[in-house]
Image 1 (tube, rainbow over the protein chains, first blue to last red):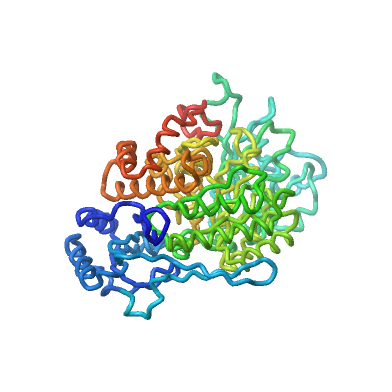
Image 2 (image 1 turned 90 degrees about the vertical axis):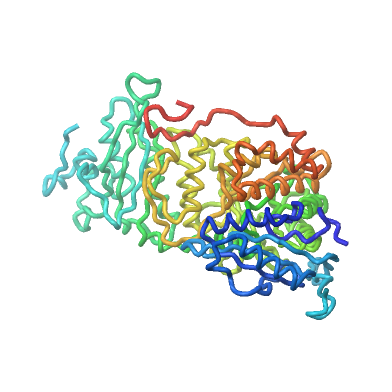
Length: 144
Length: 490
């Protein structure tokens, strides 16, 4: 079991807060839409901190302007991948940014076993560090 | 006052003529697209014509010396001459006020006066000899403008805000940091303990002190080794990317590069330097960082010796501009609410030049000259010094989202330990971002929002109880003076 605050992986904007209910998630979606950012939904069973490319749950929802519609997509994703990490992201296409502006987790596996820190002894006193999520001990597709 | 420029043969007769007559005072001049502009606050010596001193500043920061030289005539000297084109009394100074007369002067320099991509060369002219001229009592560089063509000769930040966030996978909230305390005396092993606890608790970064280099109590290699153990262990404990600004400041650039290489070999994502290493060293380190995928943190150690007093030295905002051009990714730029100098409007001005793609004239924030940053990367400002979780709503309001909030004492001084301090800061930050995004009036409701979150987070409750009355309300020495009834310190 993880021993940090909340005993869980803390990527994303709101991992230190209690899990958000549908109303709270809708408010965050509305904030993104009000800023003219596009929202997308992604999921993974590999919580490595450098796992950048989570699987896309469909295309970014460029043309969806109703938070309720996006929430429905999120709930579909949760139903399909109940034991995966699911995050909601918002992208700003404005010149000078053209990148992610929001990223928060809306679903987690029931068990978060944490990470193994593997140390490789090198020359002098230096160490090579490798972080391995215990969740990835099993092959892809058999992790939940 | 009505001295006119002399032209032709008379102009080059041996001897001494006034700077105005030499052509450095051109009230009708309209700056063009290739002009660098510098704007100064000038206090002339007693009884000296301000326009003549202003022309002197233009002259001595470009081609002039104290006497006429015939060799001017071998050059396109009218182009190389800087031109002072405006000299106006500063509001609230001079007769009938408590402050002696000061003048805002504007000087245009053709960009061919400067070597491309060299802050050292710009500064040797603009803040060189002129600050010691006997004809003036005091001089302060208030603002600058650079043409896009000249701006493009600089690489700018090695990483920039956008790429830093992408590399760290952290979006939509300020980043959180802390500076290891006590400043001096911890052994490498004890030092790494502070780093580990703060990062595991929830901070994104921990930082070396600006004066932590390689002292008898802790050799730099030991510091780097223990800090990277702490960073990696905290990363594994949280699943997040973490960093520690390893200060590579040393006596020589060669030594700094050696330390930076070691930081890279250990897998650090960020290194740190101090402003006191000098402009060329900063540019060297920025180039190294660009070539090695490293984020570059700059501590502004030393700046207040020349940026704080209103009548002499230079505005810190211009340092911010130069540092963006020089290529740093982070710079300490004030907190508004913390323990160090900073009028809110002036600090907004610092943040604007670091983070905007184009600055329009904004006299309230001290921006006298527009600046197009020509797609140069943005610098992440760092707010550090005397801030704590209870001020989160004010910090977010004043400083926005693209900032590192650095809680040193406000993390390490927590009654329940360093991890608890970090948790308090992270929870306070996330709950405030959540409230802002939900459309709440978080500035007004801030204290209630924090108290509510503290009900389910005992570390936050302890932090709020410990620091509830701590503020630093002193008058600022550096304010904008854009209208006769400007801010408090007049």
